[in-house]
Length: 287
Image (cartoon, rainbow, N blue to C red):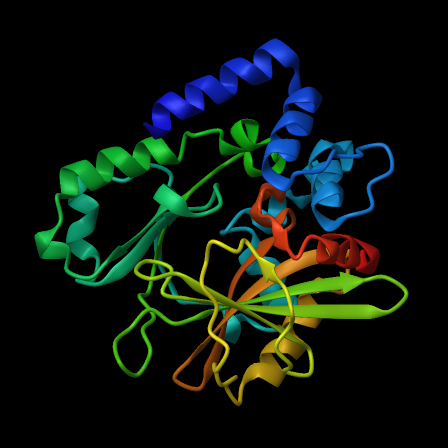
């Protein structure tokens, strides 16, 4: 069904043009008209950024391999998840030298199929895994989502250490939306159970629960206890974000240690509704 929907989407984009497609989808998604000439809301500004010729400058920051150099320079390589190996193309024989558990991902793309957690290598269909990831690394995902900076020049297949918490679970994502205008603003987004029961909570920089949701289809957790590492995570995220007017910095807190996740310049590609809707404009005013 997703392939069929992708084909319909691509046909519509070709027929009516990229800008008109964005405006149509925007109205269907957000229930208000998208002003690309004078964007005011957060989601309008994300769409405007996607269409900007300057957006290509983000390529080295969204590339999950080249961004490691930026992070190492800015805050230190100790905050990087250990990289086990990288390949331009992977062969079944390459898995022999890998540990039993790891994460395989491509350096292009924004997640989804482009990343897979391997809990037990021996139970995997390595031939299929090889075929899938050699295909993913050639995908021009940026063209499909109008974020052309994801169509990086030399995508890689990355093998990272599988980082689990004290209970053997996938750790929570701490996503710091950082707005650097006249007054710096931070929205802390916490995503739990992304691969099981996805829930999302929003907090202010001071740890207060915020009265709105980003993508309301995800249930919220209102009694979540922020970890002791939230302040150092926030400080590291701010350091990584200081050169941008808006960026989302993802971090992890695992067994007392802080790790960098990724940098995102167009959260949800601008397709995640804000509820109540008035907060979409408030977030836009921070940018």
